[in-house]
Image (cartoon, rainbow, N blue to C red; front, side, top):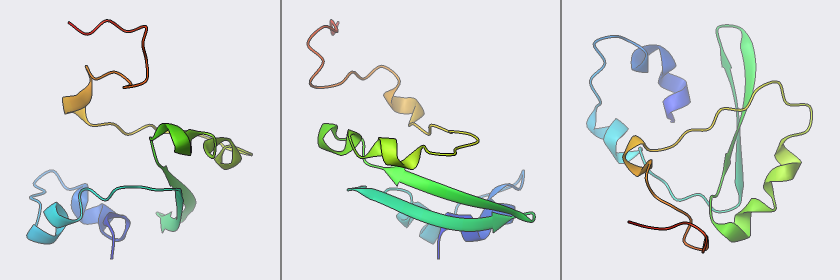
Length: 91
C-alpha cells in the first residue's frame, strides 16, 4: 500500500490525512527505489533517490529517456544548505 494507490483520494479538495497517511509520510531513502504505477491510463516510473552525497553518483542512471523530472522537497527546508558546501554563508 502506498500513496500512489490513493491518488484520487489524496487529490480531493477536502482531503484529510488518515493515521496511516501520516505514518507513511517519511521513509529514509538509501539507494534508488523504483516504483511503477498507472494513473488515468498513463504509465509512470517514479525514482526515489537518496539525497546523501554518497548516493548522488547513482542518479545519472535514472535519467535516460526521461520525459519530465519533478523534484519534491520539504517547504520547511527551503533555507537549508548542504553540509559539505563550504562556500555558503550561514547567517
